[in-house]
Image (cartoon, rainbow, N blue to C red; front, side, top):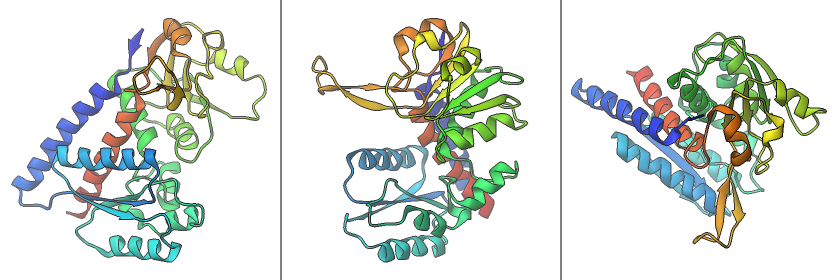
Length: 291
């Protein structure tokens, strides 16, 4: 069993991005600049945004954080987005989700300039991805592809089951892995909460991407020997034995699944760090496209 180490791989990626930034500066070109908009005080969102700002510093990017109060109107948020769309120094930006309930998430995502949409959520980028045209890939699926490639996991002709159909992970993952690419050429099945006989599907799978948000859902009796497991989930579970009072669990029951796996991502330290690294990579790409 080999751990797909996202922490180590993302660190390698950040070194590569740092070198690319140094080269841009050496050539007299602009420094990549990533902006983030955070609305409200959701704890997880604040943690994610701070991690992204820290990653920018690490690789030599400029970064801007626009911190807005919970009661910010939709109109005000759309104005902030338009300011970033028209600011030539900003190469890419993200609007941290989820947004407060009074704001239409879809309207906000549609307002982002697709050329600066480094999260890869705008319909223009999703459409281009689907047609296998150059686009910004959503950071989490992009990170998974990178892990599979760097660990030389064989995907061509393999049976892949993606559990979860979200626009952020499940659906783009299924599209990307079915395309002709190094971590692709697979036969992909998308499963979800209405799927019948899910265990029958997972027992046939060579690769399983678990992205449904139910802690420790996938258990050892649901997988075959030699399977590759990508665990996208991360949930806090109360645990009095831990100093913090909780532990982090993925969508996979690691103890029972790992012994049967050829490759498996840990939680934490698997897919999570890759997501931030690929956001940096998309921002670098946005900057290079402009120069």
